[in-house]
Amino acid sequence: MKWNVIIPLLLFMAVVFCAGVWSNRKTDESKGFISSYFIGNRDFGGLLLAMTMVATYGSASSFLGGPGAAYSIGLGWVLLAMIQVVTGYFVLLVLGKKFAIVARRYHAVTLVDFLKERYRSKTVVFLAAFSIIVFLFSSMAAQWIGGAYLIQSLTGLSYLASLFIFTLSVLVYVVVGGYRAVVITDAIQGFVMVGGTLTLLIAVIVAGGGLPNLFEELVSINPNLVTPFGQDGQLTPLYVSSYWILVGVGVVGLPQIAVRAMAYRDAKAMHRAILIGTAVVGFIMLGMHLIGVFARPIMPGIEVADQVIPLVALEILPPWVAGVALSAPLAAIMSTVDSLLILVSSTVVKDVYINYVNPDAGSDFIKKFSMAVTGVIGAVTFLIAVSPPDLIIFLNLFAFGGLEAAFIWPIVLGLYWKYANKTGAIAAMIAGMGSYIAIHFYNQSHPALFGVHTVTVPVFLSLVAFILFSLLTKGEAYQFPEKNIHKV
Image 1 (spheres, helix red, strand yellow):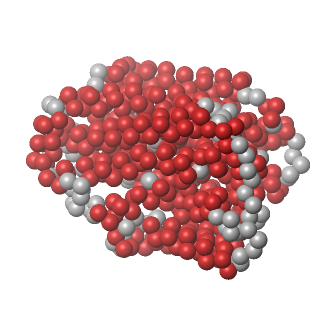
Image 2 (tube, one colour; image 1 turned 30 degrees about the vertical axis):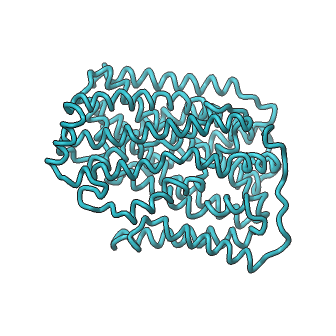
Image 3 (cartoon, rainbow, N blue to C red; image 1 turned 60 degrees about the vertical axis):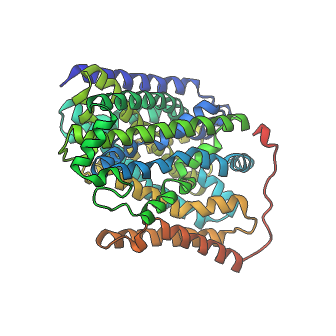
């Protein structure tokens, strides 16, 4: 083992663990355990909101899978990745004040709480819970795999042993600290992600002899690496444009991102988060994907693309600096894992068990049950991740697309269209999920349907189904709750 690389990572993990334990001690349960454990009592300021959104969205895909794809495909993948710059801005712009107002009026702790109160339908609740559990398990598995790959490349341990270490390290502080621990540790991890990206980007440019030399070598390898169309011309304009749905505007439909629009203190915090989040996401996405492309001439022939970042860091940086820089992908993975873990846990505990199985459960039982469910979910994800796919980014993007197809219109139209109703929401979720899964499997053995990403057609079909069935069963217009937005 390279202890001068591992020690900085261990120190980082120790800081995260201590922050999680500290967060648990600072938790105010005066508003109830559920509110404090799953939503942090909605008292986070702009910086924390921005960094938790960045850290939740920045994941194994951003720091391992994305750069790995950029290594294989070229600058075209960097262009595609930059679509994500609008993520935080668009989510808070569309959901922001309106979502916070409605969520507070409903006393909603989870996204499914909002859907339950808005549509008054058990079917909507169960479809939403089913979608979250199925697709977020895929997304969590991608993060578990990325964390294991990173630990494996640094320690020389087996994949299975690395997976076990990563699982244990995350579960401890999430189970103990809940949502507040997630947000506090996300902020720490967000700063680490920025620092690690900057360090590694500078180092890879220097190691490659400067930008002009790097571009010359990329052209000599394959001229298509420096075009928008990818090494094999696979990034067509239509396909890239469809990514504006998957990783751009469609992110509004991701429960793990949308729920953050429920947890900020006031409108001032939201405005600050929009500015900070947009700048940080832009820097991280550009920096990490450029590193992946620039690694191609420095270290040609890497067989497992997801290991590009740890391998190039170990190659071009002094060991202790490499350890510090590689805290960034570890931070990204851990920050996404903890957010997904607490979201799936809240779905099982709050949205299903408390709402429909045992509404009269006592506070002490709920506390123990919540922690137990969180631990079990982590263990199940560990088992799913035992046999990893070749490129984790596609496992993560599969989960993204499925969630967006299911949730984007029930959330957005539920907030802004007074005639949105439960029939429309049910039809939209079934049409979105059903067509997404069908098209996904079709695209596995055929060229992409209509030449666009899998999510494109399901999002359109979901919209049509929502509007059509809502109008066919049109009833009394819904009255949205009002509240002073500046005091949200």
